[in-house]
Image 1 (cartoon, rainbow, N blue to C red):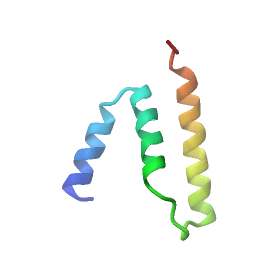
Image 2 (cartoon, one colour):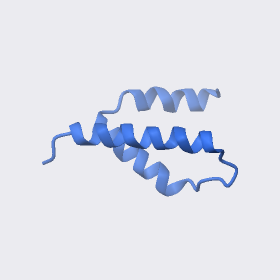
Image 3 (cartoon, one colour):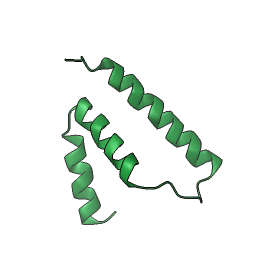
Length: 62
């Protein structure tokens, strides 16, 4: 892992749950999915998406 990536990961760890959800949305919108993803990759992405949705449901709405 490069120093730049390590720094970004460190910063992400300090975000609130709502901020992480917003970050995920922004990343998904900006980074195109690659055609070389495997079924295992899609399974991991799906699991992460469901975890994010579970976290989103825990965040109180204004």
